[in-house]
Picture: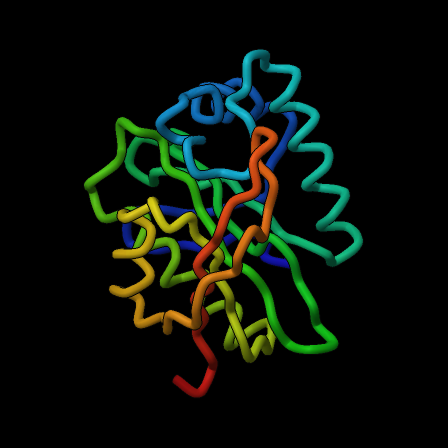
Length: 176
C-alpha cells in the first residue's frame, strides 16, 4: 500500500482519525458531494466513521483511500485513491474529491496522474476504471484529459437518495 505519494505541489498519505475535521469540512459541502455516492455529511462523527471504514478496507487490500495535502500550506484539500482493488483481475476504480476552495488549480489532474502511474507501475494494475454521473461534466473532462476511454452507460447502475441513476464507464489500460 502507498505510504506516501508526492507530486510537485501535493502529497497523499494514509487517512488518520485526526483528519476528520478537515475531511468533514470537505464532505459536508453539497457542491463537493453532489456527484459522490455518499450523502453530504452533517456531523464530524460521520467523517471519523468513514476514515475507520476506509482504513479497514485498506487493511484487507480491498481499497486504498488517502488524504490529499497541499505541500506548500500542509492543508488537507481532499481525498483520493482506489475505490476498489481486484488484484486477481489486475483492475481498480479511481476517484478523488477536492475542496471547493481549491477547484480550478489543476490539482485533480495532477493527483490523478500520479495515482494512475502508481497503479500501473507499482501495483501492477492493468485496467483502471472510473464511473461518473453523466451530469458531472468536470469529472468527464478530467477523464478525457487523462486519456480515459468512454465505454458506455451503465443503466440504473446505482441507487442514490432513493433513485436509480445511470453512470458512464470510463477506463484506461496499462497498454494505452
